[in-house]
Length: 305
Ligand code: HMG
Ligand code: MG
Image (cartoon, rainbow, N blue to C red; front, top):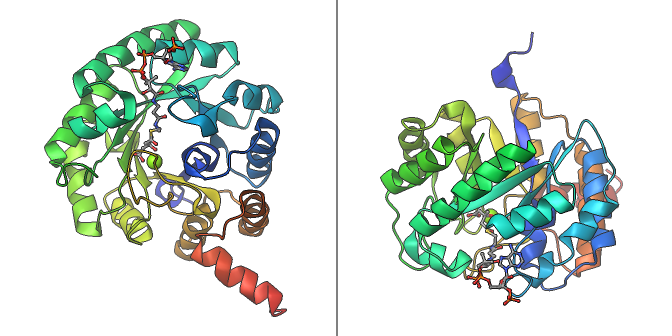
């Protein structure tokens, strides 16, 4: 018998968090093709882009066209980032049914990323929440810099818990805890989850680990031990963060799927299809995969194993 704790929900962020930081900007048609193929591989929640200023993040320009090109699928949720009411309006106009707002636990990062303080961002998000509720659109919340800030270093987990509580309190159905810099370790991750779970139900917390220091899979294991069952990942480990110098992409979806398979945890994603999609998108971008699992499987395929 399968227990609820034997399954994990994966949120695929490659087409947003990944592509927003790749050198080569992909046209909306290719981005939509990537998303559609990922959904065909079994992913059911996918970030399709961001309704942010194209001056700040040119790679996400044309997110409205991406949405127009996506198939309506009852089994799939296509989502997008919105930083303010203007972004929400653009998302609604594009037919988006779920959005995500993004705050930070570090003042310096908040200023660099969205050009305002944490308090100002939260008050903007209040407006977004009201309008989203009227439109029947669900809102997810992100907190960046949960295990360190690229500009100020240490971040107190209490500050993360406070921002998480504010987002959850205003109606975000889930809070994704972003290790933007990828400096976190398993013990720090456990302390983070414990602190946030005092303010937000554990079932409403998600892990979003960048893999800069190679700790993302270990951090996912620690977060799972602490009870988290939702994780964000990017096919092929695409991307990074434009305001976090040196940060590499999110943990590769291929690596998370391999981990979950090994643990006997259900996730609904086809690993071989994922590896094929990763190979294709890497060719579009002129990059090498950042997934250890994809590298190993591709080498095995080449040797006929
Ligand atoms: P601002 O310059 O302070 O905005 O930027 P403003 O309100 O003063 O407006 C200036 C111009 O921007 C105006 O245009 C507005 O219309 C336009 P102008 O009159 O000069 O032609 N504008 C917009 N355009 C399109 N969409 C909008 C929008 N809002 C205003 N929504 C703003 C503030 C938030 C817009 C800007 O800072 C921005 O777009 N930042 C994007 C930041 C971003 O996308 N960062 C990456 C995503 S977060 C992330 O990766 C972390 C995460 O993965 C978790 C983790 O890993 O930690 C989620
Ligand atoms: Mg991120």
